[in-house]
Image (cartoon, rainbow, N blue to C red; front, top):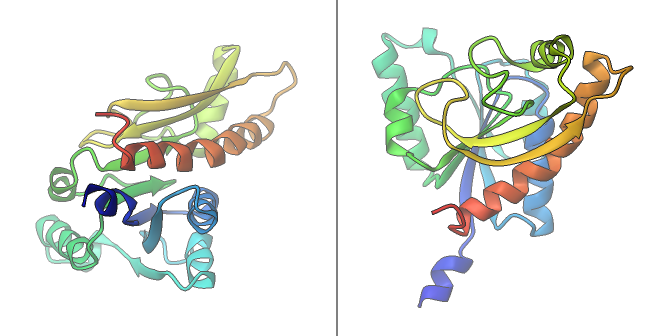
Length: 204
């Protein structure tokens, strides 16, 4: 009986705001069997996010989630939670999603929401620390290494328990763009691997 439960494919919702290259890495890992889960719902707060195109190309349902379309933040959060529950979502992965998830969602999915961050947390995290801002800050600091961090999501930006990190050396001639490209390469490997471990209960 137990083997049936563990071999069942989980359902993941991915939240994005931009290009969605980590979304694509998760889709590819799901299709190859590296990730024993299906990406079934992609949510974006930006209707022009290229990641939505990636989802549509794979026939994955998408949703534009803007809090301003609701009467109140509470209504917005409750609606999002209801939609996640209607789709029987097991895990949430945020991938370049530039908003905090509503606390009602965080509570309902405690320890089942992960984020990938393009730096070695706890350094270079928090509000405003995304995209090139992060890589610029790393280079300005003179740090000799950077990398990617996968962590659990709580009610504060980049604050939850760190699950995995992958390190990248900072080179003397690095620009924010060149550093970003090498970190992103690691993100694409690290994110599916970590989510698979989470599903398999390796972090309990």
